[in-house]
Image 1 (cartoon, rainbow, N blue to C red):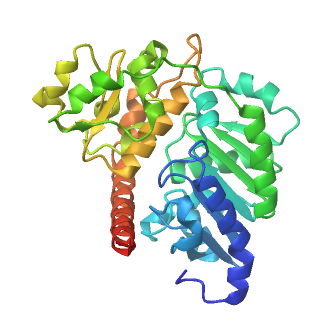
Image 2 (cartoon, rainbow, N blue to C red):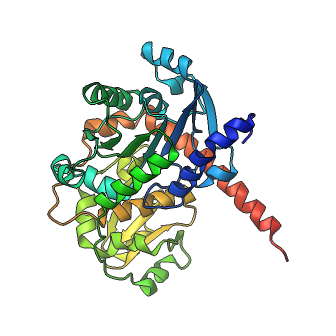
Length: 358
C-alpha cells in the first residue's frame, strides 16, 4: 500500500488486512464495496478507503491514514469527516467515535435478516445472551449513525457488539484477532438456515435472454427471487435496507424493487430497459447484460437475506421519510465510490485477460 511507509505499520496492520480479506471473501458477511474496517495506531485512524472491496485488502491500496485528533476536532464542530476527507469511508465518524482499537462494520446477511424484523431486539436478546451487545434503531449512515452509537456507549461503555436496525453489524475489540473471534461467535448465534426455493426454469429464462438485453445471473441463488412466493411478497412491501437501492442508476428507489413479470414477454417492454434485473414469476431472474459486478453482488445479497425471512416474520420496511433521507447525498456518494470501484474491477479484469497465456 502506498500510504504505508513504515515497516512497523505494515507489521502492525497485517492482521487487520487479513481479517478484512477473510470477511470480504465471504458473501454472507459483506458484499461488493460495502462494509468497512479500521485500526487506531499511534494517533492515526487507519480506515478502509471509500469504494474499496475488503476482498482486495491484501493486494490493493486499501487503507488510508487519518489523524485522530483532527477527526475528533471535526466531530466536536458537528461536521461529518467525509466532508473533509473525500477518500474516507462514509462511516468514518462511527470508527472515530468508537473507543475500540479495532472496529469492523459489515453487512452480514444473517444479521440483516434479523435487523429488518420489528421484533429484532426481542429475538436477539435470547440469541446474544451473555454478550456485551446493544440494538441501534435505524439511523442514516455517517454522522447520524455515529451519534446514535455514541449515545448508546454513554450508557454502556463496555459494548463491543452493535446490531444496526435495517443495516448490519458493528464489532469492536482490542485487536484484529479478538474481533475475528467475536465475529465467529456472533455469526454462529445469528445463523439462519435459508428457505428452500424451487429450481429455476433455465430453458424458459434462456428463451427470454435470446437476442435481448437480458442475461442469466452468474449466481444461481438469485433465481429464488422468482421461484419463491414468500420472497416476492416480502420485497413487494418496500425496501428492507439502504443498499437495496443505492446501487441503482436511477434516482427512483422504486427501481430496485424486483419487478415481477407475470408474462415473460414483459421483459421486452421499453419501460423496463433501465432496470438492472427482472423477476420472472415461477421461472427465475434475468439481469441486464451491462450489469456491474457491484450491482450483481448486491442482488445476490438481497436474495440471501429474504431467503432467511419466514413467511410470518414481522418485517420493518424502511419508511418513506427514511428513503427520502438517504436518497440524497448518501446515495450519491455510495454510487460515486461504487462507480470508482467498478472501474478498478474492470481494469483488473482487462489486465488478467492480457496476462493470460495464448
